[in-house]
Image (cartoon, rainbow, N blue to C red; front, top):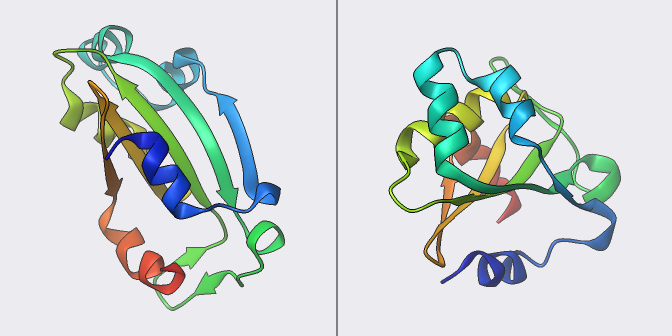
Amino acid sequence: MNADEILTALDLPIGCRLDRRVPKKLLLENGAPTAADKRRINEGIEEFFWIAALKPTTIGVPAYHDTEREYLEIAVLRLTFRENAKTQRLVELVHRAVPYPVLLITEVAHEAAKNTNREETDLLRAFV
């Protein structure tokens, strides 16, 4: 399954779609603590897109709050890696750089995978 097929299956409402390219510079400034990480970003990422912002105002689902977490928005991102990229570290850097829970769709050689951080798992169950 490729990234386009995953996005089609999600059937995201038009109102939440952003479909904006994210410059690598933004990730370099917010998510790369070391020189090696900056090199990994520059050498390993082909394209980075912010696909959608899932908010109560865009999808009609209320924000989630409990004693430990507050989910006001979920960012849906698409990341295309170059061949031989250090994908695990790049995924980690993206999750750290974005201040919201992230549904990250990654693609290498036209294969896509859904990646979420641990905190998002409970929230995603509420949406699925």
